[in-house]
Every structure is written in C-alpha cells, then in structure tokens.
Amino acid sequence: MNRDMDIDLFARFESNVRGYIRSFPTIFDTAVSATITDVNGKNYIDFFGGAGSVNYGHNSPLVNDALIHYIQRNGIGNALDKATSAKYDFIQRFQNIILKPRQLDYKIQFVGPTGTNAVETALKLARKTKQRSKVIAFTNAYHGHTLGALAVTGNEFYHDDYYGVPLNVDKLPYDHYFEQNIDSVDMLQRYLTDGSSGYDLPAAIIVETIQGEGGIHVASIEWLQKLAKICDTFDILLIVDDIQVGNGRTGYFFSFERAGIKPDIVTLSKSIGTGLPMALVLMKPEVDRWEPGEHTGTFRGNSHAFVAGSAVLDFWKDDEFSRQIRAKGERVEAKFRALHKRHPLWIHDVRGLGMIWGMESQVPGFCEAVSHACFERGLLMETAGAASQVLKFLAPLVIREDELTEGLKILSDAMDATVQTCSEQTLSQKNEVPA
Ligand SMILES: Cc1ncc(COP(=O)(O)O)c(C=O)c1O
Image 1 (cartoon, rainbow, N blue to C red):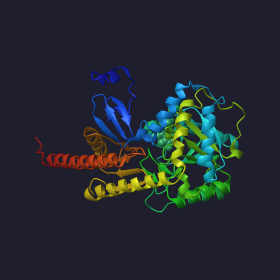
Image 2 (cartoon, rainbow, N blue to C red; image 1 turned 135 degrees about the horizontal axis):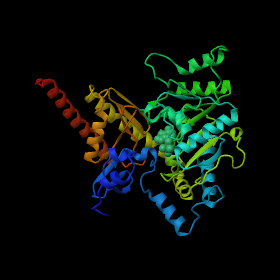
Image 3 (cartoon, helix red, strand yellow; image 1 turned 120 degrees about the vertical axis):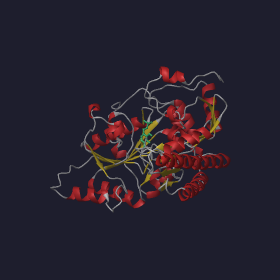
Image 4 (cartoon, rainbow, N blue to C red; image 1 turned 45 degrees about the vertical axis):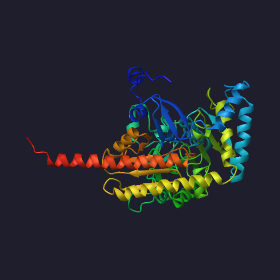
C-alpha cells in the first residue's frame, strides 16, 4: 500500500472523460464483501456495487479460490471462442442451474466483454432475423454507448447527431412515464392494427424491466405481460436487457421472471462474470440465424470470467439466496420510506424492488449533495436519472447485515446533515439584503 499516491495524477494523465472518480475522489486499494478500503486505510461501505457488477461481493472466497486454483494449474487464459474446459463448465452449469429449472430454452452467444457489446449484438441479430430495421426503445432507457446501443438510450447528454445516431429507432413512453393513464403498449397496438397509421413494423422491442441508470423505474407485471403479448401477436422480437437488473438483483435470477414472460433475446453482463469482463446474449434457438463467425471479436469468452461465473452459480441451487435478497431489500425499502417520511420536502418518491432502490428528489442538486455527504462519511452511493435526481441503492447482494446496518445509518446521517445545510443556505439567501 502506497500512502504517498496523489489523486491529481489522474487529472494530469487520464482523459477528461473520467466519471466516477469525480463522485468518489480517493484511491481505492482493497475490497472485501461490501466494504472497500482506500490507500489511506479509510473504509467505505459499498452501496454502488460496481453499477451492478459485484452482486456476489468483492473478493468472494468462492471466486478467489476457483481463480487461484485455475491460474495455478495454468488454465488457458485467452482462447477467443475456441472450446475450453472453463467454457464447458460454465455452459453446463448455466444450463443445469439457471436455464433448465426455469424451463428456458436458450442458446448462448458470448460477445465482447461489456454490456454494450451484448446490446449491439442483440439488436443486430434481431434486425437480421426479422429482416426489418426499426427497433422500439423506451424513454429513460439506458443500454450502453456503442452507436447501436446509444441509439436506444434515452439521455440526451450522451447523444449528438454527428455520432450518426439514431439508427431507425422509435422511442415510446415507458410504463408510468405519464402521470395520466397513457399506456404505450395500447398506443402501439393501435398503430400496428391501423393500416394507415404510417407506423412500420419493428424488428424488436428492447426493454429493461427496471430502468436502473434512467432513475429506478419499475415496470409493472401487467405492462410487461402486455408488451410480451404484443410482440407475440405482431411477430416482433422481445429483447430484455438484463445487464443491470439480472443476476439476482430483483430476487430472481432473471428480472423478467416476476412477470412470467419468456423474451426472445436476453442480454447479460456485469455480475455474470462476477465483475470480470464478460457479456453474453441468450436467444431462442429459432432466433439463432448467425452464419459461423458472422459476428465476431477477440475477447469473447474470458476464461477467468467463466471460472468465476461458474463458481457463483452455486448461489442459485436453492431458494435461500432469493429469500435473503428479498429480506435485505425489505430493510432498505423500510429505511428509504422512513427517510421520505422524515424529509417530505426533499424526497418525493421511493421506488424499487428486491435490492435495487431509489429515492427521488425534486430539489436540484440535493441527491448529489447527499451522495457527497455519504462519501465523506464512508459510504459509496451514486445518483441516477438524467438530472441525477435519484439516490440509488445497488449494494452487492451478499452484503452482510452489519454492513447494511452501517451503510443505512451513514445514509440517514448524511441526508439529515444535507437537509440542514441546504435549509440554512436557503434561509440565508432569503435574508440576504441586496446591496
Ligand atoms: C441496462 C444496461 N444495459 C447496458 C449497459 C451497458 O453496459 P456496459 O457499461 O458494460 O457497456 C448498462 C450499464 O450500466 C446497463 O445498465
């Protein structure tokens, strides 16, 4: 551990595009479970969870033991998409532990290692399969930053015409986007049945069952079921992007299980490799229209991620993990609702499910100020939404009870202190006598 490290080095030599370092300005060094320690020995409870990449915790002994054993026996590292024993074990265990018990018949495509690679692949595959180019996405959607994925992402901050997007994408309102009872699936149904609506049949609809980056919007079961039905009726492929809320985040392995639907294509990344780079696309066999090698890339199938990802599938051998996720989620929800009740002028909504929760504020800058106050007190908690208006809870699913208790206490103190500071500032601004 080097205590003389200077955080300014990053500003000097790393691109201006740096993001999270600005929210959490320290140099992190070690991490165990849901606690991260910086080079100065200060601990932070992790409610950020690597944006959903470390659902199984930092340095899980299960993962570390499997990796150390694999490396010590000189297990092959890079293999592109050749057959390896690591990939064999992963596929076999994923089939037996995850897919079969859920009666899901999917083929697996390993793609470049990030979520956006999986989204890009899913969109391309859907367009090829249906030989149509239009895709429907939703308001506040977040699917990644390569051009195809960006085209289905909502937030205008990431967009510009000169990037070449949008690529024949229509955006529809997500569930509950309007306060009035406007249902986008009913709207779509009308478009598609009216021969003179001027609305072309899309190849696919891509949806997050809970929008994470977009501000913790939870689609209702009824809406998801209607969406699946309309896809079925009009021969449209349903793509569920489960990159952030899959891998157990909602209490189910797949987030769509709660709605009892079976999407045609599913994207997974982040925690599927326990935080090591890995992404994959699941597709119904009839959708697998690729020619051999037609969609390729060097880093498909990271052996170490296969080993790590296989090890944690044991969590899903029975219902205990789901039960724990729901129980911890209930504690988070109770605390968030209590904070909402205590600070109704500052927090106006609480939303979430399982272990993803958000508190929305209508006061500009409030959530960022709370996030900063949390950081100073030893808690990592990010904001979500286009205006950073939502405080987002996304801790590792395996967070220990004591870590959760401590993190919630810090959050509560940080929010109380921020409310006080902001109230004092507002008061003094009101009392300022113009010169
Ligand atoms: C739902 C969803 N899709 C896609 C992505 C993009 O993944 P990546 O950042 O690994 O490219 C994200 C990232 O947060 C996501 O939340």
